[in-house]
Length: 433
Image 1 (cartoon, rainbow, N blue to C red):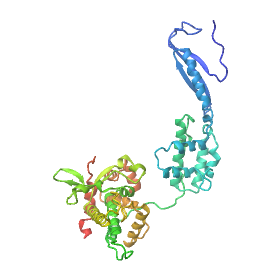
Image 2 (image 1 turned 90 degrees about the vertical axis):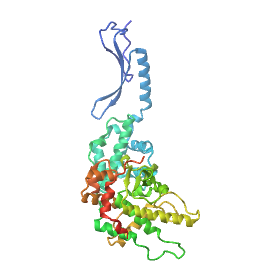
Image 3 (image 1 turned 120 degrees about the vertical axis):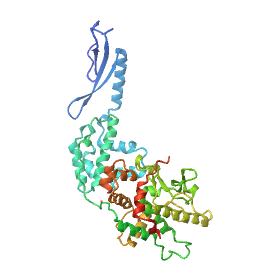
Image 4 (image 1 turned 135 degrees about the vertical axis):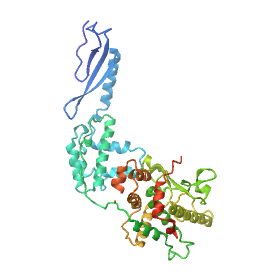
């Protein structure tokens, strides 16, 4: 009995890999080694043949594995010719699990036209129909360079990042073996907008003083009291400026995340239980207004000591909140949040920005400021005071001090005291008098 006839083209090849002397040249029965089958899947971008392999010690089982492999490859024939547009669509549909709808919509807008949501942007329309296996790095570079002629540098960088992730998603499904987007540098986009800036010590003190000023008039004769905007703005500004929390973290802060050290029990307790008749206070920065309430990074979860001025501002806001809750007779919503409207509803980010700009205008420094620059000011003032950049990175929740230095400088976990100590020196309690 001789060997089986040669297999037909496309059916794959079968061979035996010996691991010792051959005792049966015809069928390799009893020979040490393994049977191996290979099926060709075409060629890669470098002209090398792409092969899928299966092995077994038994030839019959190998034939069954080979048949399964051929069926799998056959059912995925369309996927082997997936285009860049299809890869982007698959990533938007499957690769952003857990992201907020806002994030998905923003990423889709990078590739699809606003005027015609079903059409790719002109920069990507030329390569959208290109098969991933045939896509070249030069084509991706040309598309991003076209976008860089009209889009900002940040937008082009985001486009490049999302394009890379879309192809990586296809790689995970074995639709392509090389991610050409990883091999190019991000083109430089247009310089639009303005970089973040930092308040000087004098400007910061003026903003704090302006936020403390009581209102001169009431908005409407029917209003019971108009103390909330100044009290809220003062607490918001000193918390972001003197403690360095992000604006998104401040908006998600709840009263039970403001804690004080109780000498009797020797523990940190929420002020909602222990009250404000203590000397040491801290804030637990564990949440933000992001999707699912998570902070920006795991390192951002931190507990920070409060400078005396920040503790006094929060105490005043707490007292006002309690007064309003009693006066409302159950009509005020109790969300537990620190920064809310007079009705207890969540404070909108846009309203906070407008209130902050009005405060800056009252302070005489102009309206060209945003709340996020309070955090930049926090980093800059600590750096100017001689604090090590690594310690500042711990305070602001950066995983690397490089971000702190290049971008921001111009459980209860152990409470980090250094920031509060420096800020107490810069903004003494007398400022509140």
